[in-house]
Image (cartoon, rainbow, N blue to C red; front, side):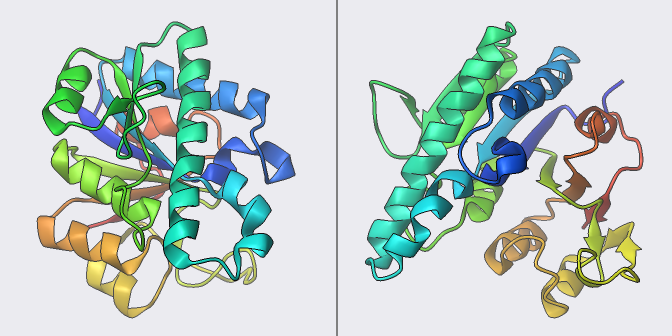
Length: 235
């Protein structure tokens, strides 16, 4: 039996790139879609936010002297590309999905309307939230937090490439210690870099837990929603 009835799953754009670290790897997206669909098949209502770093990073050098607002809008459009790729992969295996964009583009996605999103979730559709919040200066972490609060998700599941939250970067420090549980304030004061400070503060103010787990371990999404001890709980 699932521990959560409704979750917001946050994936980085790099999660869709596979080993090449940029672009979209069809095999990687297919594998992610299979895991997400299996969770939805258990009756868990899934909202999904995907970043755009796998696409936007490719033009980051050219964008360095670009206006920040223009650059952020380009990043939002990158998330729409990823959302459509994920929707295609999910629908190829029979999952019902909707892409809802904060920037209106009627030919490719529904406009984001909170009540409609909640209705889709209640009908068992996987809802992919694209284009961030439509506002510059906000990350996709913040967009994920905002959507999680709006749809009344019980948890934000933040997928990463490490097992959870550590006291220091485990990629650089072999002696790094992983937390099983940690408070919002500790994450902020220790600058642990799990999500941006705005996201953590919003979760703290609204008592929304964050579960940080390793996406590269196959089956972790299902383990997480089943209530197994996976990753780190921030709360």
